[in-house]
Length: 356
Image 1 (cartoon, rainbow, N blue to C red):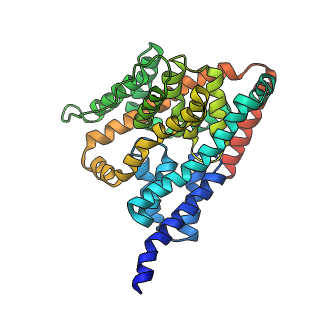
Image 2: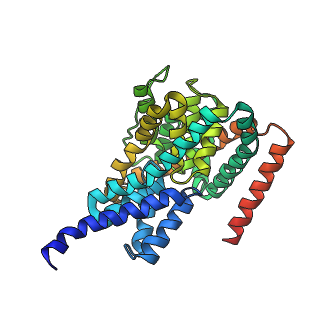
Image 3: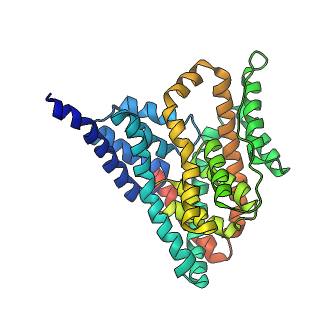
């Protein structure tokens, strides 16, 4: 191969990664499962960048680390195709289109639409979002409860949340409980978690730190984001549950990562600058985790305590999501039309699942 061609090959691969994931960031509606299916079709079937087995291993590896799975898949595929620069380009290309779209939507929400128009939109959209999250929760039940020990972990997580224990502490407790239930008395695990950031009013630095904390510890389905937003953002009085529901709606119905819900909330708190720092905060840890995916897989295979801890955190996260969903449903069902909309949306989701 001529030297000039060898020089251009890495740049060509980077461009291929940028084009693919930027396009998926524009058309990728439907959440992480839909995103991963789109990626599989393009990088396995159409382009043969990776084999079927390699792709499956990547999916499993991304499920082992905190953060948005489909975004981390974009990074992992980018790294596989074009090295560490491909990891960065894959993630940025997938996130930026969604960021721009959500910024446009929230600008209209804040500055163009009237309060009555927003109320009308919310009346129809929010019950659909509740149906989507409920359907996701039902689909994840087999992940949360696979044996009697998982049942204990779920009950423990729900109990802790009901009595008012902070969510991060609940997940730490159930993770340790899972280790003890599965491996005690012959193993010990060391667990690290970011401390809660005690903040009162949202400056740009505070917004960044809160979303950095969420992005660093959130584990499981992207819908678990509800748990942390309810605690860390609504719980601080930064936004109301109505605004949270609107943010979730936009994150779900716009293309790209569901985590761009953070973009909406950041804009609501401090305009474009707030949107930028919230987005940066929640996605920044994913670039680190994606770079460490290979090592995490090896570590989980070599250390049973670590695998047991992750399993407990996964079960606990889904249990907490059920509790938050219950509270959000009380905000969504304002009249009989909302209930009917929810019912129709749930039937459509179940029908689609059966057809698959």
